[in-house]
Length: 365
Image 1 (cartoon, rainbow, N blue to C red):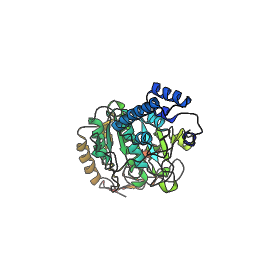
Image 2: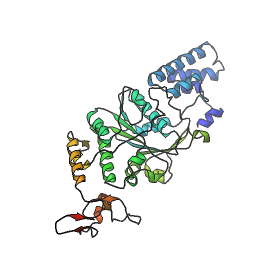
Image 3: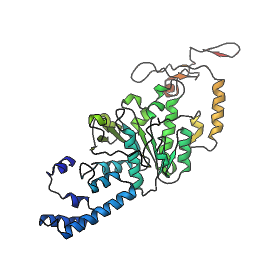
Image 4: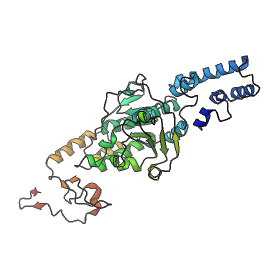
């Protein structure tokens, strides 16, 4: 549709389309039909509707609409499909995953979605992120730890969204051979989505390869956005949208977005290009620290207890469990069964034969 409008092959008045006033748009269309669109009335209506549109765009920091109204963009039609994407991202507790090649503008798109949702909620939307730059905005809080984000969700009222970058590495159990990373991430993500009143949306920036993204971040995604490619490939302004992970796997595309615009670095929403996003999974005892979908007030107490137990614990050995697709697990575990938390259901009750208990009751590996 956008390409057809750009070529002028579609019988429509762009000025009438851009007008938010339906009556004014209809009048401009009739003037064009009569060939007098350049008369005093037509000029007045175009000036009035463009002014109204710019005023609204200025209030919401809608750069794309400002560019369209002023003719600064290549086309009077911008970012086709954006409205449909925002409708998918707006519901409470949505989990949105943006993935694609490195340098394809995933983080910028994430920031732009948050910025547009902020305007959709008339500024009544609280934002948390581990991306430097947008935190200069009064509605944005900078967090880069599990505990910090859960405290923010617990203590922040109203509509919320968390924009989190570089979670592919942080939340992937393959990157952490020791500990129950998968279990921790699962409880953490589900607590985020529950939030206060179930209103927290989670927008995750992921890597290009599926296996680099933690399973729960993939399979629980309500919306998957795949950036097409890099700017030097002419694809940075395009993305495909899927209604969930299964639709992405089946390549069942819901819509394609064209004409995506950058968020200027000078904007209060602009990202700091010199900062590398970081996130620390700092909870050591998530089962005790996360109760009824939120971080408990005295979560640090369990943190200390977990650290003390770690110091006196059994030496970690590789999990003897088997993956569903075949092959060994390989995650390190200190459980007497020899199985990690994820494969504990394979335990038949016997102690790990690789562990030998001597007469003094000391455990050796």
